[in-house]
Image (cartoon, rainbow, N blue to C red; front, top):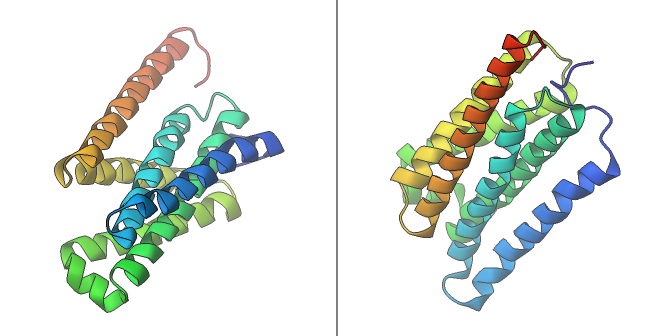
Length: 197
């Protein structure tokens, strides 16, 4: 058995991911009640929750070969982030813009089409993760998707935003860059000691 798929998920692992995810989602839905545009606030805060869930998911994904527990937590966080992204998309399209057509016009093709593509790819990736048997092609697809998500979210948060969202983008990039460096160093040490990656 490899760590390229979720296996033997425990109640503790499930709880460790979905209780905080649920609390963050509740915050994203309730915080806008304190003032401002309710629908815009919920749309904005839900994407922040997505980023907050993607950070540990992607960090743990880098270290998934260490143990099944780490791999499981990564996959559960990835799935939780997708579920929150679905809430974000639903709220943005049907509450903030009111219709898919209005969302397309309001966001423009340059934003709407990549967002829709991102959602479809994420759904496919997650379905393959949970339902498909392990293969090199599937693993390569997962790696490519995660790299693409890192690049897209980093660019969107740092280049396309200002204020708190941009700061969150720098944290996102910084934490993942540090984790990538740590993974590279540990992989080099393992190779030099003759241990498998």
